Image (cartoon, rainbow, N blue to C red; front, top):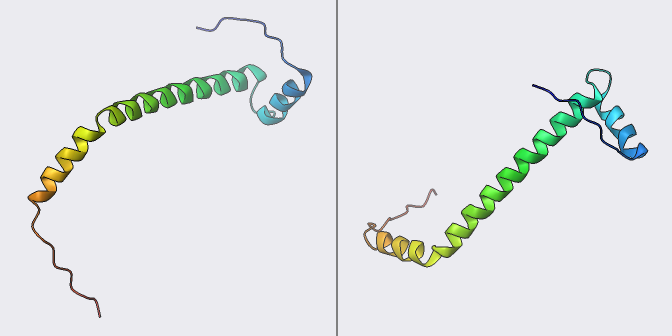
Length: 82
């Protein structure tokens, strides 16, 4: 469902919207797509920031686990490709 609304934009921004939208899309469709993309990117950025915070908060634990796992790894002998 769509709701009609009114917004105020600077004339240079509106001209850019018209150029980018071209004749294939209406201003409304272009602006709606731009807002959806922006909101999706903001949500992704926020999720990434939360993930990084979780990783950073648990970095010491993860590093200890990694060191423990590597102690069980068999030595690897590399042969020269010559």
